[in-house]
Structures are given as structure tokens and as C-alpha cells.
Image (cartoon, rainbow, N blue to C red; front, side, top):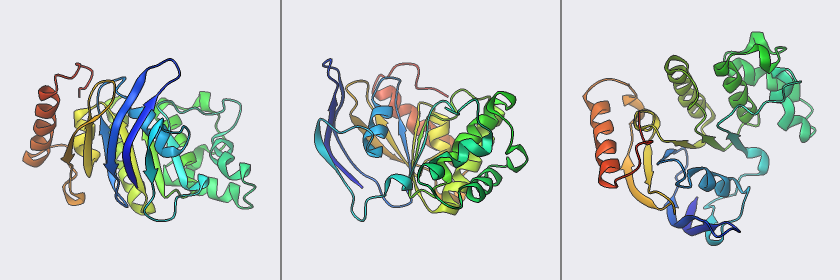
Length: 246
């Protein structure tokens, strides 16, 4: 995918994104890093096709993914409270009248370790479990493109680490391209194959930085600490707000 000169201005006059040019490679795990309000979520919506850019273009180098081939995980789990985990996960397939919706939904729940909670309703699940259901719902269509908008920001560190690992494993097993939004330096340093650092509004690409190799995904050690240090120095050089943090 190639973004060229993408701008987004809202009807009230707010310029959210300005002159975004970016190439996203097949099977990238691209992390968008930046402070709150810099347009990360807006950029994700433009890539998903939920909103059009005001100017510029978003072009696919191959066949564009069909709507069912884009998975989207929001900041909140956004589950239907009256429906079971299984019904929530099966929803995208049922909307397309897929004949194997229930079987595929059960398989997606099993992928995220919730096979035994298929008939549980969201209010009976922990925050981490609800987010797993949301991830399963995004994966059930076997997406070519997975978009994740700060999905772990509200979780405790133990759950966050576990879901980060599961997210990497699932993206690799699906062979999909992932674009992940965060304002955590440590999350970016751990997850990303490439980091795009965005400046405050109007959001622009300030730097592109290398992430971790697939064989070097660890939260300790010299290489991880060096990546965090590089990101921290880049943030400090831009005088970004303090909410770009750990």
C-alpha cells in the first residue's frame, strides 16, 4: 500500500493529517507511534476506508482487500453486551451470510484461548478476555490487513504482555499485514518491524525507525534497550508531549 500526500481536514476546520506519504509492505508489522491527538486513529480509519482523505491518495500495489479482508480492533472491545462471545465473534460472518460462521467463530475463539468461554456474555469476562474476543472477531474473517487502535492501553501490564505475544503469533500465522497504533515506546520497540513516529496535530510523519527482527522479540537485553533509547531520543528531539510514554 502507498499513501501519497494524504491530508485530512474535518468540516469544523481542524487539520488532523497533513502530507502523509508512506509505503506499507506486505506482512509488515507497522507501529504508528505518537502523542494523543496527532491523528493516528484518523490515519487508521482512512486506511480502512471508513473515511476518505481530503486530498492525496491511498493506492494498493496489488488487489485491494475486500471489506471482509480487513480486521479492525478498537481501543475498547466494543462487544454487544446481550450477545455471547461466540455470537460477537460470528457477527462479521453472519452479516455476510457465511454458511460456516459458527464453526469459524469457535476456531477464532480457540486461537485466542477462549474456547471454554464461547457462551459467556461480556459482563462475565475480564477486560483482557473481552479484548481477546474483540481480537477473535477481527481475525474470524482471516484478514489480509489487521488494524489495531491502541487495543491494550487500558489493560494491566501482565495481560498486556500476554496479548502482545498472542497478537504477534496470530499475525504471523495468518500472514497478514498489521498496522498498530500506540503511544507507548516500549510497546512500539517490542512489536514493530518498523516504527512511524508522528508529530503533534496536524499529524505528519516525523521519523521512520527500524523495529525488531522476528528473532529478536524480547523485552530485555541490549538490543531491546537500544531500540527504546533510539525511540526516546527521537521523541525528545521533537519535543513531544509527555503522554508518549512507557
